[in-house]
Image 1 (cartoon, helix red, strand yellow):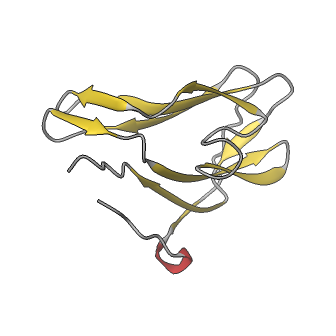
Image 2 (image 1 turned 90 degrees about the horizontal axis):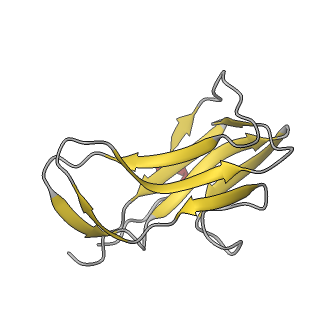
Length: 117
């Protein structure tokens, strides 16, 4: 399965009022409607994050996956079994020392991109 995201089709995510700091996590979760096993290693993520006052994007890019240098990847996408109607993380990052962030402020896109279907 492949998804094509173009800028005009992306949803704007307003900036959050809350500010995360060092040690805070950003978890991207999935709630399946039925129990399933997915290969989410091809997940596509473009999540806007304002980091220390600068707009950045957590996402799949040439910078080594979802993590930016200000964050440490704590859960990478992989094969996983998911329980129906239960929110479960499939990607997660933790803010490093000196990092303060707000989620949002630009367009976003998240897709599991299960390539086993």
